[in-house]
Image 1: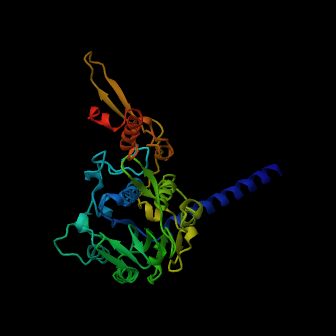
Image 2: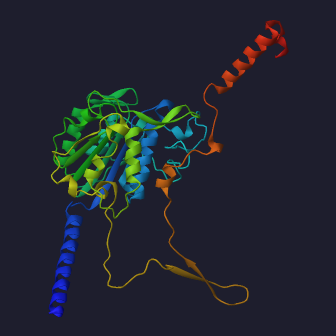
Length: 383
């Protein structure tokens, strides 16, 4: 009797385990895509829009960390904050006031910069209507099996987003561009994210299938900045993107987090504005759509029947010392940079700078004390 009970338990466990594996496999292949692309756009110029460049570079860093290569990312930056003469730390862009993580880095590949970032070029990238001389690095070479992430940040209003403070793209133009992409079989699924004032107005006119959209604010609301830095006199990021990136830092290529988790990012208590999303055009249930379906990259898988232990040393290199004996040097895996811990660190004292106007205020106080003590006739002794 005990043997029969044990066998029944083993059979039930095997059935549950096989169903779990089958469900995981079904979820893995449910999206139907074979490759991932990202189009990341900062539309703002001038130093006081530093945060928009930091927004875009931070998202760029996150999608690269999750596996999307530079060859599948189109990065458009309307201004070069790293080389701006007002930047107290040249060749760097920081997204947090602790100044620990330089999101500009050494491996940033900007495809469109400065005055190349226009409404026309953006629409041409999406629709594929580029001159034959355009290099591959500036093209969106997607197909009907591509999942595409499109991220926009800048200044906007009800139904438009400004480019370079000189032109605008409307929600109708954007909706028509996505429809052209669908008709030309340039995407399988598309995730649109925008961080701007009245951002929800930009996805109101969408009508193409398999499209999901998120915005940092509703119509009539402002999208607010975050992380003020007194040393450079500007804000380092926008609120919505800051909390979006904080969420993405906990995501890894094997994460099971889905789009419903992403919708909860930055509630009104944190963003002050009210983030919005639209899913009625999307064919799948957002709860079954993994975050890595858009922010990660599909990996090629090689099936093997051999057991590989990745916790031990992965390679041994033999070196020949002077005494003739062979020595072995081991190389092992190391932990990833703990960026999620860096985000919550407090600024170091060495990074502190006097606030704007501090020196001027100090001189004013000295002069007032001098006038009170000696009068204006002794002013010449100071100079």
